[in-house]
Length: 259
Ligand code: IPE
Ligand code: IPE
Ligand code: MG
Image (tube, rainbow, N blue to C red):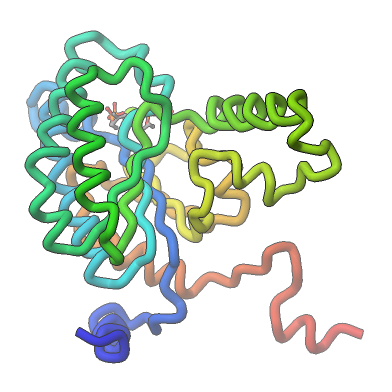
């Protein structure tokens, strides 16, 4: 599909002009455990079902031509959970990395991973690296997976790198700008999220992309992550397209009337 017909199809099935689409969507995929418990299932079954939502959301973002989708898979605070749940999550991650490769390649998706590697079993890291390498030349949607990710930890790592460079004399303090800091984060080179979606109703950020979401539009649904589907994504995008993003300025018509 060429870009013109692709943008027309987005307009017709979403009712949103291609230029009003978010460039980068980030998602706090929450509520797996609650969903499972409501079905009378063990919490981990919610994680298993959550993989289906990941696949559907990723494929839909690729179809819509969204530049980047970032998914919060495991926070640096999630290590507080019971060992059984953590083992299950690691197994699921490994399985995902292997089984989703064909979908990733078929949809021209480039996989990237942000977060710290410590604590992730070697075998899981190996499969992560294989998927990253295999998809590196893909030119469609970037699927960025935040695994053992924490926004504060990311800032600590960035400050350490900059302080090391400053101590070595290769970074002048006067050159520490917002752009320089962004270039030292795990997300260097990625656009900031335009739309941040959280499922399962909590009104908090939970240490996700603290620097990058400074002007993201927030959208929270009561639906749990295993219930999240294309229609939920469309609703979020439609709401986003109707928002007035001022970035600290004034609405265009108010600015025109200002003296
Ligand atoms: C989100 O679902 C997935 C992870 C944090 C790994 P939860 O496991 O947090 O589900 P709830 O919030 O307890 O329902
Ligand atoms: C946020 O969910 C982390 C992920 C979705 C991976 P949590 O369930 O860990 O967040 P809190 O504990 O409710 O803030
Ligand atoms: Mg949760």
